Image 1 (spheres, protein in one colour):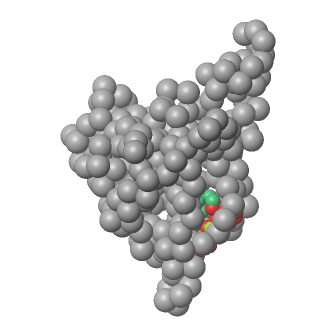
Image 2: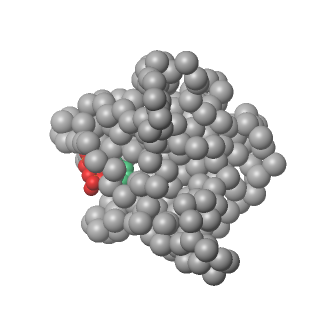
Length: 224
Ligand code: IPE
Ligand code: IPE
Ligand code: MG
């Protein structure tokens, strides 16, 4: 049995959580942020080396402007309210994806947060912002090609996740069983866990259970 080092989560179901309660979607996203807070605290306490969270995909721009703007404000508010706690606790923030396409105020805040935690050596919290795996692979391949032969190793070395441990476990909430353009390359030999729990209902206990389930799985990597 081996413990997971790197877990990634597709945090899905905020909209359905709100709809079920006849509440505005924005409130679902707000509750989603509370789940992020719980899970980051949990990941840190459980000693995970890296937690990667899918917060905004390259496809999420297709949502109504109002929802995109709600998500941006929530992100800013979350950094302002929680950065100090996580920074003090040794969390290192990293962004995967092209976050520079966001509005300047968001970019500035994100960069301040990265700088504030850059020296930390505890859990790495990698947040996927304006992230799409196909875009990431295309960017990595372009960089690898400029340096020499394209091989799985040279591409891996240029991915946004190059400095993270290999992905052990991918979790998706809300009952959808698809990757939605998340970590396609990194999932090659990751274990997967799909749960019906909606993201705003996800707790540190759910994460603990997922880690326990992971520890009992036998990974073969094609061998025997
Ligand atoms: C996930 O919840 C949050 C983001 C994609 C930012 P959704 O907003 O996708 O919720 P559902 O899938 O509509 O329930
Ligand atoms: C994936 O969820 C993106 C994030 C969780 C940020 P979506 O809700 O956007 O995915 P689809 O549209 O159901 O595939
Ligand atoms: Mg969704």
